[in-house]
Structure formats: C-alpha cells, structure tokens
Length: 480
Image (cartoon, rainbow, N blue to C red):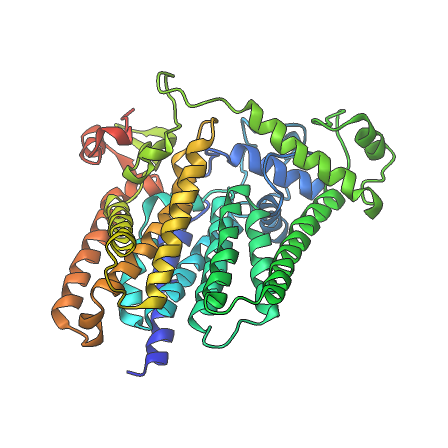
C-alpha cells in the first residue's frame, strides 16, 4: 500500500478510536468536577458580558463559552447565579454540560491526530506511528481531564500543533526557514500562552530552531529579525485575546470588581472598557491579578488531610491521583479519578531514561551519532523536559498531577524518538519480529486502559474491584 494511502487510512482510524476514547458521551457525568466550578462561572460571564478577573489568560475559558454559545443547551435554564460567583457550588436542575465541555473535549479528540502526525514526521513510518499513538489514544489521565470544562484539553491541542509545526520546520530545513515560518510559530506560541502561562516554557523551541538552522553559519541580522517576528506574533495573539476579553466582559455586577484599582473601577462605571485607548491599563491590571492570585495559593502540605497536591519529583511515577468526584450506586461506587495508564507512564519514564543516557554518553564519552537530526531533536526535548521540571520544582505553591501533562507528552515523544534511534536498522528492514514485539506492548497499553476505564468514565465499582486497581501506594487511591 502506498505511504500516502496508509497515512490517510491511519488518520481516519485514529479519529474513529479517539471518538470512542475521548469524545463519546463527553457530557457525562452531569455534575461539576474539579476546576469546572471556576471555569463554567467564567464562561457564563462572557455570555452575559459580566466583568471578572481570572488567574489564567482568557483563551481557554473563551472556548468553553463559545461551546455553550454555539450549542446553547441551557437556554431554558436559569444560570444567573453563575454571574455573581467565582466558584459554583451547585448547578440548576436539568443543566447540560454539552456546551461548556464541547471545545475542550473536541480539541482533545483532534489532538490524537496531531500526535500521530508528529510521530509520522519524525519517522515517515505510518504503521509504527499509528501503533505508538496508542500512548495518547489510551492515556486515562489525559482523557478524564480533557473531558471536562477545563483548560488543559484546549492547551494541549495548541501545544501539539506548535510542536508539529516545529518538527516540520526541522525536517524540511535543508533549505532555510523563511521569515513567515517564524511568524506562524509565534502565532501558535501566542495561542499556547493565552490559555495557561505554564506553556511559556515552549518558547525555548525558538532558540532550538535557530540553533538548528544557524549552527554552521551564524547570520545575526537574520536571527534578530526572526526572533523579533516570533515575539511580535506571540504578543499580537496574547494581547488581542485579552482585548477581546475586555470587550466581552465589561459590566460589573453587585460591585464585584475583584482587584481592580480605583482608576479601573471608574473606567468600568463609565462604560469605557471597550475603548482601545484603555487596553494597556486593563492589560496591566489583569496581569497583575495573576501575580496577586498566585501569592495566595497555598503551599504543598503532605500532612494536610485530603491533600490533592503532589511534588513534581514524584509526578513521573503517578503521584498523586485525584478523586474528582464520587457517588454511591447501590452497593457500588462511581469514581471519576485522575489516574494515568501506568503502562504509558512507564514508557515515558523509559523514554527519559534512555534519552538522557544517550545524550550523556555522547557528551561525556564522545559516542558517535547515528542520526544527527534525530539526535538534535532528542537533545532538545531532554532539555525542555529538564527545564520544565526544574521550573515546577522552584515554585512554592501547591501543584497537581495534571501539571505533568506537558512533560509527559514530551517524554512520550522522546520514547518514540529513542525507539526510532535505537532500532533504526530493524525499522529500515521492516523486521517482522520487531513489529510483533511493538504490537504486543501496545496490546498491553490498551488492556491496561480498559482495566482502569471505570475510573475514567465514572462506571460503578465494588470496593474489591476498586482495590484491584490500587497498584501502588503513592498513587493515593482511596475507596469510599
């Protein structure tokens, strides 16, 4: 079968599988969980033009609001209580989550295809890329979190789109990347940081790309222009997202001004928040609110009863799973748990381990490089992973397991690159035994996903069935 035909066939197959793992019945359970209490309140304020400040940039919440606006499943439901609350404790009877969860879940559904295309660009092997995409298709923790009205499903989509474009530029850099290439990369980066600021670490990709392009001949004039274009494009996206926020959310209710200064409050009272001349003031105040909010976030406390946070150093090993919600169902209990697929997380750990060993062995012992382009990508992702984790370790505030999603994805891509690097000869010969071994491994990935799926999709479990899934003590799985 021709390679392009395989690519199209596997792409459709991935979307079909992704529909069932990510998208199907995404509005279930019909209850709030985790940060939906905050983000649905914010989305409703957009729909009603109500002023608010938030600790995250606006783009992710705007997509939550857009889903509700397009599908409008709650037109006959009184949601006015959402407008005067930062945190929703209860939802009106009959409230549907189809609108607010639509875009985070839809983007997560599409992300599986982006992940596959990244692997294909790296290897140009459709079958191997398809098999390895199992690590994203069947990752329980990313699935359960992405099916909520939260920010990570949308952010991961733009992160993968950003990385896809980066790998495409590196793979096609026999000729120089043009100035527009850096504009596009900057626009995508701007989208990433307009959802959550932890995506800012990916800005290192700009330096990595410039090193790849100019490692032989340094042309400072071109480098400076490309940096300027990237930064400018990023700023344009970031600022315009906030400008849209100022236009949409401009009318305070019940004197709810958050941390707005007296000048900003006077501006809102006069109805001038949509005036472009006031945007710099508003942007400064909203960015200042992020800093103010972060100072108030509590620190991680291992002795605190019910502490859901965890230390970054323990994230690769799945510490700590979070019980998003539960309810009794007869003698059984339904759980919605942030619980990863341990087979997939193990593959990520192995990817990091072998990649670090490869890099160290070359730098310390001058071992030869078999594939310069692939080694460069491996080295780049090792640095990204280490710097991201180092940045997380430097934060004093409490952090949660889903903050590991970005480095988890980096580790899985690293695992794929190491597979290609270490078994390059077998892959060139299409070694049957090698593919059978890979197929068996990913058969286990799917089997473990199915085993843990009751915690992902809110299916009832008896106490004994729950305990069968409590494999490691540091996961923190606790039956009700």
